[in-house]
Image (tube, rainbow, N blue to C red; front, side, top):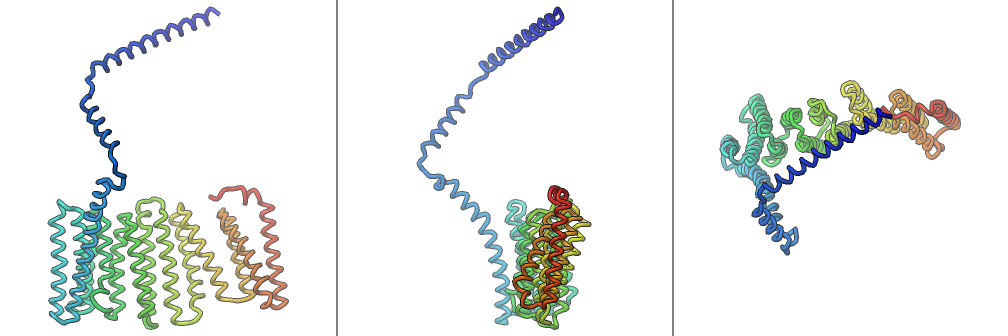
Length: 456
C-alpha cells in the first residue's frame, strides 16, 4: 500500500508541474497578442468591400465577370480557331477556282499555295514568344496548307514524281509531330491533321487514284500514331479514327470496284493495326491501365474493321457476311490471346474481346447453317464457354453459357419444330436435356467453388 500511495503522490506532483507550465504558456501567448498591432485599415477595407458586395442588386448572371468570360472565350478561342479554318478553306477554294477558270499555270497555282503556307509558318514563328497559343493555331494552319498543296501537286498536276511527293509529305508529317510536341498543344495536331484529311476534297474532284489517296491518309495516320505514343491526346486520336474510316466508307460506297479488292483489304488491315496501336499505345508506353476512352476507341476500331470487311466482300459473293463474321471470330480470339499474354492486367479489354469472339461465333453459326447444325453448334459454343469460364474463373462467361443453352432450347421449340425430322428432334432434345442436366450437376457438385468465389 505504501508503494501505491507513493506512486499516486508522484503522479499528482507531475500533473501540478504540467498545469503550471501550461498556464505560463497561456500568459505568454496573451501578452504577445496584446503587443501585436491590429490591421485596422485592412479590416475597414474588408468591411467596406463586404458591404459593397452585399448591397448589389444584380443577379449573378448579370455580373460583369460573366460578360468578360464569354468575351474571352470568343475572342481568345472561337475566333482564332474559326479564323484559321476559314483561312485554310479560303486558300483551298482559291486554288480550286484557279483550276476551274484556268487563270494561271499549274506550277504558279501550287507555288502560290506553298507561299501562303510558308507565310503562315513564319508569322507563327514571329508571334510565338508573345502569343504562344495563337502561334500554335497559325502553325497548324500552315501545316494543313502544305499538306494539301503537296498532295495536289502530285495527284492532280504531276509536277513531281512519287518519291518527291512522299519525301515532302513525310517531312511535313515529321515537322508537325515535332511542333506539336514542342508547343505541347494538341490543337496543332488536330487542326493540322484535320486539314490534311479534308482539304483534298475541297481543291478538286477525286483524281481516281485511290492508291495515292489512301497512301496519303496512311502517312498522316502514321504521324498520329507517333504522336499518340508520346501524348495522351484522345481528341486527336478520336478525330483521326473517325475521319479515316469515314473516308474509307465513303470511297467504298461510291467508288469501290471489284478490281480494287486487294487495295481495300490492305487499307483495312493497315487502318486496324495503326489505330489499335494509336488508341492504347500511350497506356502501354507509360505502363498504366487503359482508360475507358482508350478502350472504347480500340473496340470501335474493331467494329469498323468488321463493317469495312463486309462492305468489301459483299460486292464479290453472296455469302460474304457469314465468312467475314467467321474470320472476325478468329481475329477477336487472336486479339484476346495477345492481350492475355502481353497485357495480363487488362481484364476489361480481355473480357470485351471475349464478348466479341463469343458473339461473332454465335452469329457465324446462325448465318452459315440452318436447323439442327445450328443447335448443335450453339451447344458446343456453350460448352466451350462454360469450360473456359470455369478454368479462367470468369463468372459472366459461365453464365453466358447457360444463356446460350436456353437460347438453343428456345430456338428448338419455337423455330425448328417444323423444320426438323423426327429423328433430328429426338437427338436435339436429348442432347440439350443431357447438357442442361450436366450443367445442373456441376452447379450442385461445385456450388461453393462456382458461386461463392470471386472472379480473379
